[in-house]
Length: 553
Image (tube, rainbow, N blue to C red; front, side, top):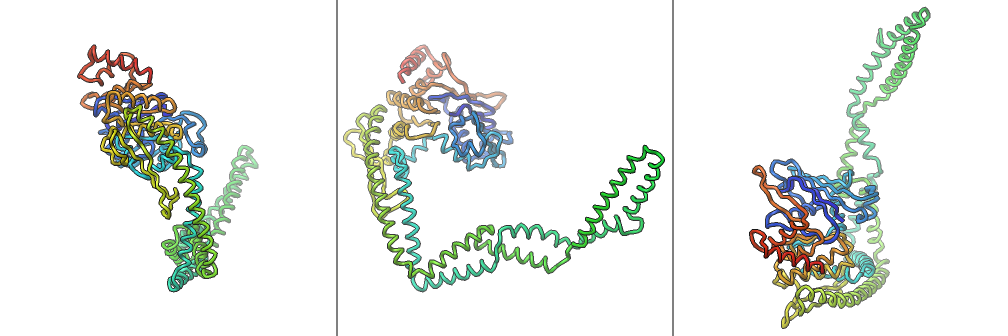
């Protein structure tokens, strides 16, 4: 569940915290008040692309913070970010340059993690998002989700990967003699080049460490000589002077015991200085001025750089490339002996794939029948009592993919006398919205996403149908948190929690403010949504009737 959403410097929102509750949360307000900005901000928090044009005028950065229940997070994310309790704070910033940063609690998080969390935590459905229903691949995915066909999908994907790999290998084995000869020569050259390079993990780091010492060897030698000379070699060196001072203070301490601590300190200093002097002496003797070795290291780095352009960005990548080339070389050299075995393995893999595709096809046919039955029931409640719905599922033999060989098409006849047509050919946005909502209702049990967001998906409907949509959204709110931006009082009255977005002008600046509505304020808001510039006794009465009847939602 999303407990709260804090938004700062986002378009017309200066700073606003929206505290949310379980169930259906309705967001209402006049057109342009900023309702959809709240949804856009939530999308940005969960990995959507940001734009510096969103920044409020005069602001250097915008910020969105969401507080979520920790049990909604995947176990691996909880372990990675040491999440132990709720709420979990997700935070994302965007500055004037367009750069974004994100955190989970106080720990920095990459955008990829936020995007992954977005897929797990929230399912967005806007006025345009439900257009994804028009895609055959999405329809097939929804059917698989409804039928809980994860086991069949995994088996089919594994069978496809095995067949695809063997087919590629078989294609190599069936090369012409000239193609095989050329490829063998290429592999031989690459293997020779990689083997002669004597690649070794850690070598680049060693070269980088040695390079500055060799480049600056003369400077190091001069500095070490100068230090050693000052400390020890020259007449009147620091060591000699310190020894004289130590001896003089030693004489003092024999007469005046109060000088003994000073003498001991000088003695310790001398001993320490002797250690430093010896270390510098050893260092200067080992400084290596070797132009030949420097040239060799630079040449080695240049050689590695050329290899990287061909085989990978790191030595580990190049070693892995060597293994791949060696394996291919071995296959090509022994292709004639392997051909018969490959053909047998490929035939067996193809049969296994056909069996897997047939198995998932039968499971989908069964799921399609159940989906048709349940969806028609929901469409009847949503004001389409005579609609007909069917899932057209065709298996195209030989057209294999990781999901099988099926193509799915949702078919709908919204009114009596009409023939079934693909959902993508439906002209009415209201009908498409209801099909989408019916699907979400039917899939609610299979869909584990805890938060559903609907942004004006009730466009194009009204009256009794709008009331039916409100009831359905309220029913969805019984099993997960639902956020719904709506202009319809018939939908808003079914909400467990009602929020109103109001646009105001303060000191010449436009601000959007969100307020939770209860009691008379909610009644007045519903009355205004029913029509008119202000609430009247009649509109309030109508609103009260809506609220009273919403108890049955």
